[in-house]
Each structure stands twice: as C-alpha cells, then as structure tokens.
View (cartoon, each protein chain N blue to C red):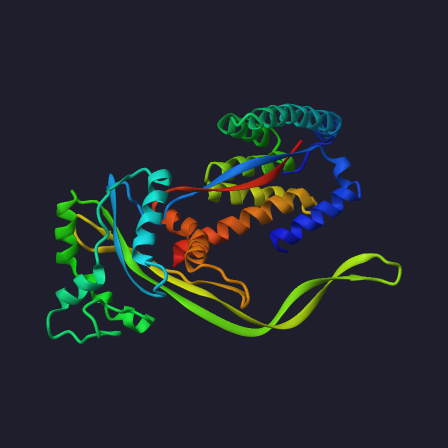
Length: 255
Length: 127
C-alpha cells in the first residue's frame, strides 16, 4: 500500500469511528536527510559557471550561477564566493588546443551549443585536474560547482486528459475527465551538476537531471519563467548534495 | 531418581501454591507495568508536542523497557527516532509496533510514510 493509499484508508477508518477507540495526536515532524557529499572540509563554495546551450532567450549559464549562489547563501553552511561566471565553453575550446574539432555553429567566434551532442564535446574540461586545481588555488581551495545546462524549446502534440464541467438532467454540476487532442509546447531543462574538490582538482560527485514542461500552444509563456519553474523542481535535489535537508510531514502519536 | 512417597505430595503442593500465587499476581503485575509505561508515554507525547524530542525519546524508551508489548510506545519511539534522523532504529521500532498491533492502521500509516522517505534516501545513496 502506498503512503497516499494508507492515508485514504486511515481517513476512512477514522470516519467510521475507529479513531474514537484510540487516543491519538497528529504531530508535525521534520525528517533530516543527510547530504550526499561530505563537505565538512570546505568553508567556501565557488559556483564557477556552466557550459550552457539551447534556447537563446535565456542565458542559462548566468541565470544558473545567480540562482545557485542565492540558494547556497541561504541554505548551506558555506560562504559563497562572488566572482564573475566563467565562459567555460570558450575555456574548454582553448584548453583543447588548435587541433580540437569545432562544434555546433561556428560561423562566429562565440561557441554555439544547440544539442546534447554539442555539449558532450566539452565534457573533457571537467576531467582537467590541473585546470581546476589552479582555479582552486586562486580562490583558497573551495568546493567548486560547475557542469552543463541545456535548456531547449520543445513541442509535442497528442491526447491529453482534462476535466470538463457538465450539468446532469437535474441541473447538478459535476466535472468529468475528457480526452482531447492538443498541441503543446514548452521547454526541456537538462542540467548536469559537477562538484570538484578545489584542493586537488578532482571531481567528487556529479548528477544529471532532466525536467520538462509543456503548455497549451496558444499560451505564451516567457522562456525565463519556464526556466525558473523547471529549476524550482531541481533545487531541493541540488541542495541535498551539500547540506542536510529537512522533509516536513506529519505522524501520529498514540497513547 | 524418583520422589519418595512423602516428598512428592509436599513438592507438588508447593508447586500448585506457587502456580496459583503467580497466576493471580501476573494480571495485576501486567496492569501495573502497563500503567507505568502509559504514564511515560503520556509524558513523552506532552513534551514531543513542545518540540522536546530528546526527552520524548527517553520517555518512550523507558516505556518499552517497562512494557515491551506496548505497541503505541514502540510507534511513538519510532517517530522520535525518525525526527532525529536515526532511520535504522526507527525502522526496527516501527517493525516492532506493527508486529505487536498488525491491525492498527495508524501505526501502518506512519510506517508507510517513513518507508517512502527512507526508500527514497536509500535509492539516492546507492546511485
């Protein structure tokens, strides 16, 4: 039985008067979830920047750096280093040397990343221990947070279920589920967070996520608000890597 | 070696008397234990409602020591362990509570909610 199912069963039991036989007290609890990474050795964290691509409407590198720094400031025990986000894609291209094959749309000097394949060609920078160690030394050996972000427009059409209000023969209103064909568009956010030890330059941990959101095709939702909506879903998982998070819930105490 | 003709009835009588004595005494002793455990449970609930979970945990630990068959005390103890992130202890206490009161839906609901969080944490850690 799932927790939700159990909840329904319990409510039913209570409604039937079983609850009257037992003294019980509902109490709020906060369950602490320990972090995935032991960051006790670090007093500072540097969100250095992300290799980003996809939609041109959002600067995913800049927005992600800002968002993560603000979250870490209020919800982690480490001091957040303020520094300009690094253009990691360009640094990766330079570090790869002149022999490196150009990727994406290279009509201009700026690196254009449109797909996951484009992003993958920059992954080598995260294994560049010497580069990260040097950067760590510059900032007094912090925990370094970096990675890749792909934020792409997306559209999908198909049958969707929605509720519709109807009136029965006695004039009573009720809602029924109806399936309709709908054209929808939205965005996909695929970030990969990489945590690097600023003392050694080695990767401590990395985690990849994927979130998508779809709206009615007629709805005009700005890319930036979709970006924040999707990031909101990921932030708890990101933070649980570095700091203890508390899951709020209720339990029943019995006499 | 068998009993002699005189010893047997004496020992048998002593045994019967002892059985009668403890037979009559044990329900009363059980009631006393439950009553003492119940007062610990009540006090624990009182302090837990004020956020004093350490004290509540201590009280419920005492309650299950006094009366290890008290399902409600095991349930409450499990909640206290959970609140403090002691998941292994919480699981054992919930299992004990469920074993003692398999039909108690409130205990089962607590246990299901605990498992949902605990399993999520474990699957995340094993990634």
